[in-house]
Image 1 (cartoon, one colour):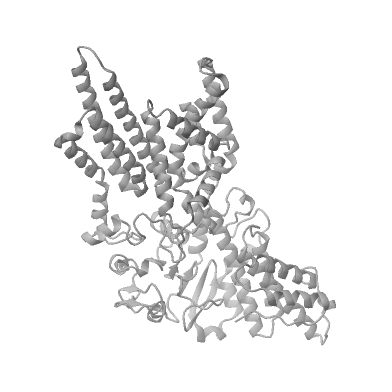
Image 2 (cartoon, one colour; image 1 turned 30 degrees about the vertical axis):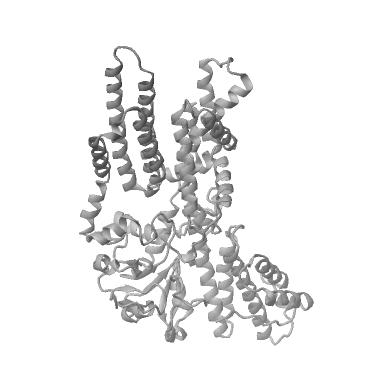
Length: 636
């Protein structure tokens, strides 16, 4: 059974996904496993001590007491190591500590010895020793490091994650608390998918069987207590928006710890099922266990091989390169989102790619320690205060706004400032390409270049297309040829669903095509609807929609709306240039009244946040008068 459990957990898709990444979760499960192993050794010592009899009783019990002492002290050391790696291990450590101390008090009485408590405390503190490296490294202030640990206040803030909220996952303004019932349904579905669907009923049966045998199976009871305490405590504290698929994926990472123990509880379920079907007296031959384990291994590995196979996954690298490599010399990037900041920073620090580019995470700029620890990595950048304000107009002493930052650093002939991933929440106006007051943005590859609003009339299409060579090259690519370097996850959407970072960067890339098309349409509106520019805009919009995942709603909905308006303006312009009041002769396969209605219907069906009454009226107008000159415009 242990072999079957190992096979199930080893090839579980969720665990595999994060075990092949540079993440804390695999090491966390190692520390959990070590703590559970030491707990089992301790409990076995307790059981043996209860049963020992005869002349050697005192001697054997003393040996077992020392063994229990050693395993519990070693467990305290690994508890400290685990805590220095990831805080959520505390939800397993607490029930383990309580369980061990209770059994020790009943059997060995080590808890009545001061030396025992001293040993436990010293071992735990020794386990926290990796934090010494944190203190030492903070003096040099590594690029991208979080917090200022050169002071005691800063160190404690970092240890307790106060800036996120201690024992909280999320610090965004859209945080939400999901009901435990919904989390239970989501977790049950994920557990079933990860363990061949039979895992969930076996987990339930195993939990009941463990409770029934608790009197003589202390370790099984400990597993059940750990699983229950972790699951309930974690989900009561979880504040991540479960309605956001990507954030749900972030939350799922913490189910890895629960899956480890949950998979162990499957085994009592299998034993109970065996007893129910075959009875206690009928035992399968020992040689049967090998083929059974092999069958489980083949099923788990084989059924999930396609999803687990990441041998050709270079999406993050290509994504970061497609951001960095087209940028002008010494460009300043104001980034938003871990997928941008972490991937770009990795290329710069580890592979020495475009180290001249100065990338600053907008959220990190809001912390008081950012200027102190990070400013030396951004030569030439002026910080007009101690930290960026978290909300516009908050007026905190020493803070500065994004506009003040742009005013201090924008130079017409100097290195450009770009935003990548959008503006921080509540900072930018909710209008396309508007930055903060007095500034606007222009598409620049996967980013957007910031310029003064007054300079916008002087921007030409040729300049913008020169800045967007990488996107322009991508729309000329044929299927299978990705020479432009732009990523496409389109052929592997089944492998990378909406909860993955790969899908996230795929959508961000498609949004870059959409934004360029959108900007070109707006330029055309201001310049007598240049036909060539409108056609070019349609190419970029169509490139985005060709690979847009069907399950994504809002972003693709807007892209359909923009393309419908673009087609309408293109047809009208061609008709008016010939002095015609009917557009019938100027429609083609790509742009016609049916395609306009089709795009608008998709928008109406998918858009959930904005009113679609105007679009519904336009659809009816085209149905009634398909060849009329209907003037549609994008909002400026």
